Image 1 (cartoon, rainbow, N blue to C red):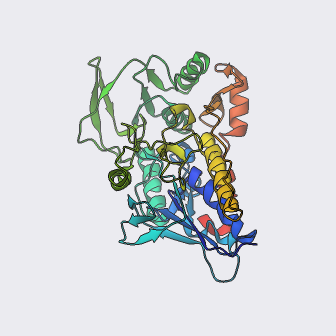
Image 2: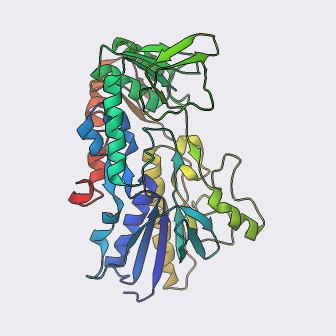
Image 3: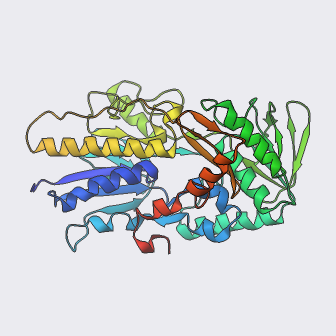
Length: 399
């Protein structure tokens, strides 16, 4: 048993941050009673955004997607006096030994994990600070979708396909149009068979799928889930009139908090797109700070590693390396760390409503066939993995 005081700070509490925080906090009850973990997030909750497409059409399901962050680490307290801590704040600056928060607080750390993710538009991201406000905003979207007759979804990646499919499945009398700028749906690193299958199955539900069309999006348009009759124009000149609009065309990384550290070190730590450079061990790409790790969408791994499954795998790697470093500190030995295996996502399951779906597994595409429907409806469409997320929290976390 070690008596050392160890402070691990994890910033950004979604898939990657949750995985790291829980693994490391478990050390407090397993040989490191003076280890404490501080988790930091701008919101009071984590939002299981994978389930957002279903939450649009199922109000009660939407409520289940929110989990209170102040409950995440309660099971890992080594004594009656809590050591682990949750802080609701934005990260504003990273320094060599401290971080600064929007609350004005400065925290020292022994180890730091940056897992601040990437932001996308509503409902993939809910811009609300409290759990109650987040639920209320998603509930209003549910009501607005009910009230809309014409729905426009811009972007034919997995999320866009799922949103269009869920709405068309739940409301067969609504006009749903999905517009995508590429020649086929879904990420291009997957087989064309699932793209063709997605088009086929969306059309079975009555969705109009328009490919090779780019919508001109005015700077002042808001994709906030409000019923707002709008006409947008595509590059083809076609006009698209809708009551409610969804934008599902990508994400944006926020990593401005690295600027001060870059100035101190005299080097760039970020790529042009804002992602933070990492070593194969997922440590920050500088030899000066081996105690900082970066996991999930905010790091510079390629796009094929930016899926929830891969974020979970990155969390396991970062946690394992952190634990190795913590243990080696007690033995004055150089830690031998694991490297990311450079694997990218080669499996995808995309629900298209409750009973249809496309699947790629082991290099085999199940597009138009019913195999995709059967597997996807049982594996993902039944609850979009929210029951798996719930197991990481105590029962009252989303009461």
